[in-house]
Length: 247
Length: 332
Image 1 (cartoon, each protein chain N blue to C red):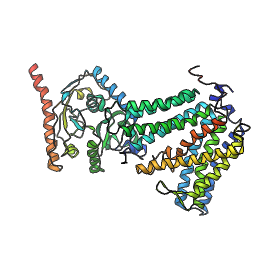
Image 2 (cartoon, rainbow over the protein chains, first blue to last red; image 1 turned 90 degrees about the vertical axis):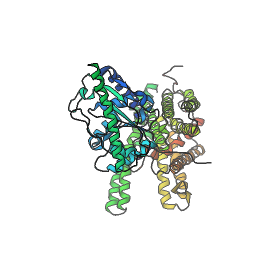
Image 3 (cartoon, chains in turn green, orange; image 1 turned 180 degrees about the horizontal axis):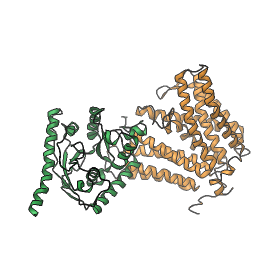
Image 4 (cartoon, rainbow over the protein chains, first blue to last red; image 1 turned 45 degrees about the vertical axis):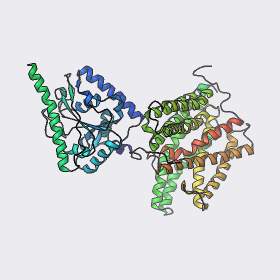
């Protein structure tokens, strides 16, 4: 008789504080119930408080893995993107957050884990290893990552250049990248403000990009960052064009 | 004794002498142990590394022992809830090592099954307690169909059923003892003998063990340790059991000796069962919850098989909770 295919939790044996900070953290039943509750609540909040409008939902791949990327101007961004995904993905949606900002202390890590279900990407210490684990996990567990390639929130609401980290995650894997443009989150909750204002939020989801033929090395990563940046900027220009017509 | 008194009245905690003996004996041991380890360390009788392990284990016991004994002393309600919580945490560890936790629907059914078992125990509703075994098995098999993913169906369902049977059904019998009027001495006597069985096996194994018991499953266990534990646990369980089951049908030397053998054998088999699970998965400890011990399962593995065996053995002679009102929550 052949052996069974038994696969223990990837974060087995880690103490709680380390488990919260691990890129390998896997949700259990309690966490799953938490996701269901949190994303449900978030969806209702966006719908009634921000009158959210999502276009291009059909562009989201039917099955993970994929990476959603977008411009980044507000703490609301990750929540908006995650809420746009359908319910059966909820256990596998992970916003990727800067480890040194969101996972530095156990209290912060608990916050990022329970409120955002975020996974850490360490920018300085252990960056290469951190990216390697995230890259491996993306396909192995069929995850949906939410990533902001600018690396930080834009302080005045404009898009700055995309960093190559996105490339390191997906170059040569064939995992599709879904470009998105978020409009209104900067007005609702810009960096530095505490409470969201009830402004309208729009999310535009573009056609998925594939980089399966791009080599997993520096020029490949740059190419991915540049191509994705153009796609996101195009989605942003669409707004200007339409508003122009309206006037 | 009214049901309310049985469930909640802590003032009767020490009415039975065995409860008093075991509790005070344990308090004494836990008070003396750190001093003893300190003396052994200072005089150089044990190595630093060995001492650190002993300190860590003792430290853990200082937390574990009150958590095990406290609910039993406080009242049957707390004892039943404590067993329910133990079952849930044991299942959680099991699900995480086997990977079953990724099957959310099956896991949910197992957890609901454990909660219902705890309710049946609390309500002294034996018919439901029994019925939940086939019903939950059926629910697990049915739920697993919903994913429409036949590849791996047998594995997922079997893992779910094993989890429920071990931590819901088998461990649930431990809680069911709390429906007996005499639950405090019975539970404390059972916990003491099962834990001492582990200690006896360890100590006699170190002293007389040569031949390996099951080298592939658990390389440190010896035949000497197993036999030593069998003899010592039987003597302890039978002699203390004489006072626990005083002047009942069980209070006969032969019956008590068989009971002792049953506890020791089932305890050691439970230990080996968990070792087999860990060997199969290729892991050393189930989790890192209890320093020096590992996970909850590493600590409570021996209880899992003992609970149903002793329950039905005692049930055969005396019955469990026969003079206590049943189904007081749902009514007759």
